[in-house]
Amino acid sequence: MRASERSRRASSAVVVYVIVLVAFQVFLITVAVEAFLTDEETLAWSTAAVSVVLAGSSAALLRYLRP
Image 1 (cartoon, rainbow, N blue to C red):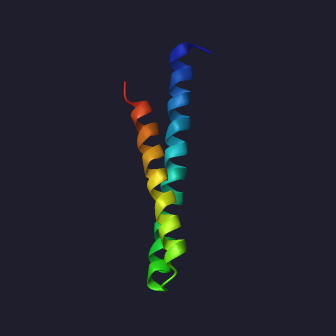
Image 2: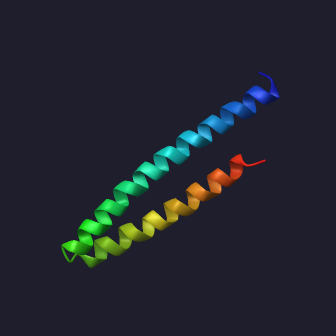
């Protein structure tokens, strides 16, 4: 396998990871909002914190894609 093909595969894998992380983040935001509305503050804050961590990791992975 050539170096350019290997880097293209790695970039595709990172894009797939970012898509999965963003989808999970949307789910967590939905759970956090629903928990806030039902007055379950512990669940709401913990899911919001995990969502922020996922946003940071997605940003780090996207930064990896830039040359």
